Image 1 (cartoon, helix red, strand yellow):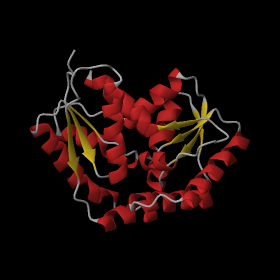
Image 2: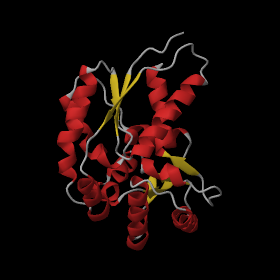
Image 3: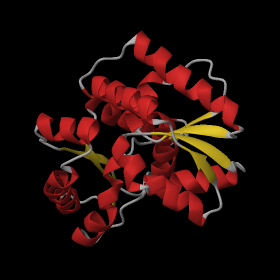
Image 4: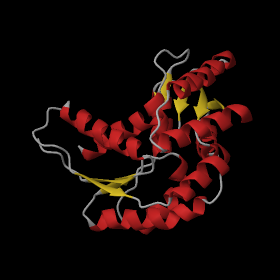
Length: 231
């Protein structure tokens, strides 16, 4: 049985995360015992680093991403992709604009994550993400519509998370950052949660080894959803 659909990935919104996302799709497809590799096209966004830093650290200038995202989505469509994914939670604030710019389906990491949590009976979750994702209420709104309770980090913790994410985007994976992330997650254990979601795909690079709470990685949830769509 051959893989059916060609997926287009809007990438480089965290280069290492794009690579991990691609490799996870390849690995998951291989486990399906198919006779070919999946058809994948990746568009790497030539984004000025200052725009990235302004968004992560200062939560400003998100609108400067939009022309890049639309251009790459349209380029992927012209290249023959049958659906598009963007392994970046924060930039899903623009998913409607991207969907309106192309005629092929664009999967939502938010929708796939909410569906996964509901299937696993997760009723109250902690959210670890960028300030942009928190302030845009992407997950909060989706959780409210689906009767899922949630808790976000305090301001001090959020500042640490943003710094950790910026380090990851710069290619730095530090043990001290992994430990800091584990401390923040373990602090959630006092709030009677069912789980914590890593609602920033870059954070999968620092997923703690022995957390106090169950962790759901949105990148893994999204890559699994992508594989299901490919088949």
